[in-house]
Image (cartoon, rainbow, N blue to C red):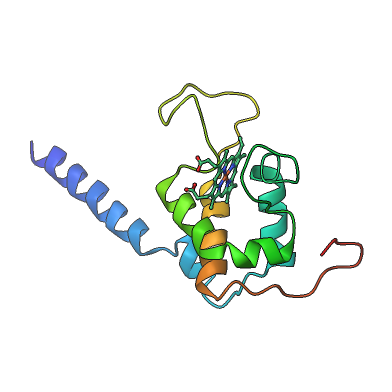
Amino acid sequence: MKLTATKALTVCMAFLFLGTIKTPSSQAQNYVPTYYTDVQSILEKHCTACHVVGGIAPFTLTSGQDAVTNASEIARVVTQGNMPPWMPGEDSPPYLNDTRLGATSKQMLFDWVKAGAPLGKPLPGQKP
Ligand code: HEC
């Protein structure tokens, strides 16, 4: 009995300790994401299939200006989890080509909006 209690305590301590280890957002504390370095690729991967000229979404997210104009809306829909739409629902079985945003991409979008949605500088060959 005593042994089990000690074990349980050890496990608790381990979790407490793990809790103090840096989380991704605190790691990125000094890093300011920009549209060109971080956001464009996320939007291209998760949003512009619909948010494109002629797409089913009511506005485009294909340029830096689009992203900046809609920055707070982007943060809102990402927080609410309703964009990108995922028909199978939250507790769906795993699918190939899951279009949902991962935790890292979400955090990147939040950090970007929080930093005032800076555009940054396009890399060579990157579209505006
Ligand atoms: C499968 C197509 C599709 C994808 C992918 C998609 N959207 Fe949308 N989005 C829509 C449609 C359609 C609407 C308008 C209808 C609606 O509001 O539900 C919309 C509306 C929005 C709105 C307006 C606010 C609102 O709540 O209606 C925002 C902001 C938005 N999308 C952001 C995004 C972002 C950011 C992504 C990528 C992370 C994304 N969308 C991915 C189809 C899409």
